[in-house]
Length: 601
Picture 1 (cartoon, helix red, strand yellow):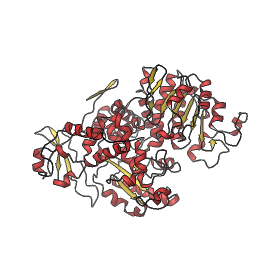
Picture 2 (tube, one colour):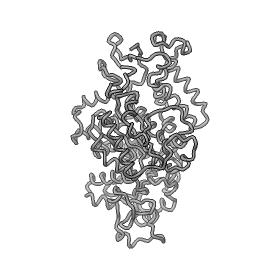
Picture 3 (tube, rainbow, N blue to C red):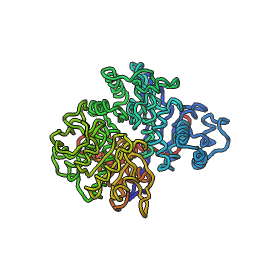
Picture 4 (tube, one colour):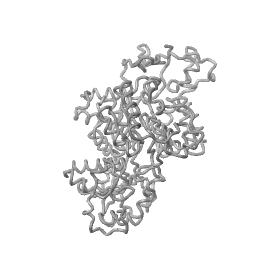
């Protein structure tokens, strides 16, 4: 049991007496599972019946305990002489790791250190990172993961996940059968076209689903045995990768059109055949494909896109807190979003939903949300728009009397100076796009300007929090898409809230998995964001940050999971009908977090 934040959060393991096989033989040709989880009546605890011995056992990160194998386990499992004789406790292992970790000279080497541990001993890895979560989350996840993705082929150490390359498209079923844990709860898949703010990274994009699924366990305690990272290798248009002799991916220009669609469909159908109840998490697909694939498959397989829906939900939570701090209502806001890709439009959709819940018609809400892409304001004269952007088109007649800079492009400056927005959000990956002139003009017309530079990594942020506070005399309500240090402002320090998707997608996944939801609906996404907003420190302190800290993330994830289940229940998307049932299912899916006792299988 853990006490955190303002409420109690129970994190129990599986109910005693439940006999959950670690793997299931679901397809012909699937190998016999190497271990099985059983309940030992005499010991009143779960144990693992292990069918591997010696080096083979230590070579499985899920099973390896390293120097913590007991003397009895060493005798029974063929490990005598293969390990130093002294048995370390888990705490001694953690203390030893901490000393070595602190010797690493930079963030990239720390990331490599942690992933090497992950590849050797999964249980110890998660315990180590969870014990230093606030410190190590940026090393494992954003922003450092961006650098590891760029260097993936050069720092590659060990396979983790399933690599599905287009030339091997007719063997997808065989590839899935080769996965070492036939029972699977969730898959995170990418085609690596739009990695963070750094674009097409080819096969190296595998680093993202690996990191995302690590966060599932770190933040929501989802059992890592049931999580599978997948990369769809459809080539790359990144010439630096194609020219790199060490590049590990398919050396071909990126596929598009019917060939691409057929390949993705082959993958989805193979997943449905192999694991029909899996949650499919789409990640870092390009703007042409991300929304289109989500819309195509969201009713066919339980799935969500974190770039679109997770980002939108966490932004909604921060906006709910900010609007409350400004002592205003959503219906009174005028919103400008600089960056009209899938993330920006996803946020816009959630804002429109919030305005409708606040009493506006959909048409009225849409009239208050203005989007800009790289070519300027989206209007009825804009060309080559994506289908998901069309509802945000503004007629040129609306801006006929605006004072504008010269040229056909309607710039961010033009919009801010003429519209006088109350909310300014950046998802553009254009660094320092929120200039002093723009921010000061916005602050002249609203008492509490709400400004969210959400692009990441840090080098892509539209503004720095310290600048925003200085330009608005400390009145700005700020949340960022990447972690920033506390800001010294006047006589005190201000913590800047981070719109970290880790507050949403692990709990969303836990709720969808535990409830056995048929799909992830818009209502479930909104419910996740609304629940997260209740954890804003600003609820009880007007000077506090808009977003919580990672210290509370386990309890937040559990609350989000329950809110997601309740929304699924209201919409008829789950058969899990009682609180007792969902509590049991959530406990069932949560990771134990320590070593099991092993017995020969």
